[in-house]
Image (cartoon, rainbow over all chains, first blue to last red):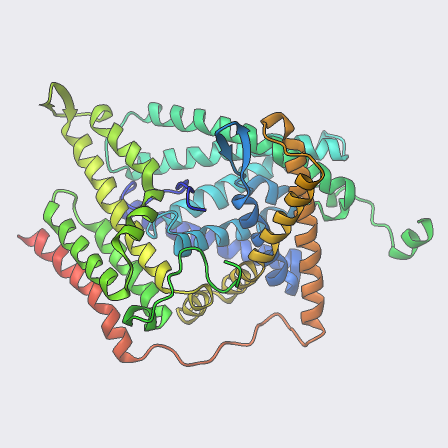
Length: 234
Length: 253
């Protein structure tokens, strides 16, 4: 893991008051996520969310080659949203970010609120709103949920990057042209999002084929089949 | 990291910094970073003072400078951003070596490099002297909500298992003669990510059932009550207090 480069905002990029503001925002939003995630998972929350967070962390450690010499890794936010839903997803991504900050020095301590807001809150919220909207009319099949995951990944990553633009606009430490920053961030993140979306789509389609009951985005549309009947049918 | 108790940045030493209770180290690191970020960027020498403080802590912790410098390279993308600032910044400009540089941009670049580096080095020192378990215990004692410390505990406990799972799948794929190396061959990678999720989720369900059958009711037994002593709080307070003193002197001067 020696060649890992920071993807997260460092200290000193955004000034203190704005960082503090977003830290408060992140704490409030996460408290709400905990409340809603409990409704999803009840007292299974800690072990299940822990394993999903470990999954996201492990996925971020897996590099795949894009071209010879260029490799990338997944961020996993949209993947988590489609597979486990927005509340547990946001909790898991935040836990990953906190641990990366404290144990891997990735992302500044004072910028933790900013990073959580962008990647765990804005990214998952945008991704999930799209998933909820798209799943209304796309086919509820592995292909359909895969396409949803692709679009949600691209949009989620780009929107999360614009979260940084907003924060920089509010509390950037240097005057820069905001359109330049917004354009650069969006351009870079569209590329990241396309790669991310391709892998997320295939991953989600695989899971949907094997255990469709585990895919959160499909759960609402499933007819509940009593376990006994399922056993008879098989 | 085969043992699963340490993490890649942990350095096994027995110095005074390693012996401090984790909660005092976390708080000291946080306060120090806050002081650094709050310091006005024009007070150049204050940042030199902070660097000296960190060098003293690194010496006490037995963390080599070379190790710190190598790991601090994680910050590189932001240094590149900083290099661009003097050219892209607005406002008053100065000429240097025939280049026109923005004064605001120069200060901005300094701000990012200085505060970023000090923050990364402080975090590295925390990571180098604290094991994963201690970090969770420390967060717990700092009254971090139990749901987060529990999720983090499970995450760290199972991270190595999942990483090994992924490694085994990769070796199985390689030994069957398939080594995808281009973006258009990404399907094999994605399918193993999918099965990694299934394995993780199903393992979570098994772990939960095993815990319920041992009497789990949504709460984990709290670790031993012994926290930091007053002496340890005082010892670790030296770093943020000294930093705050530097900051106050710099501002009042």
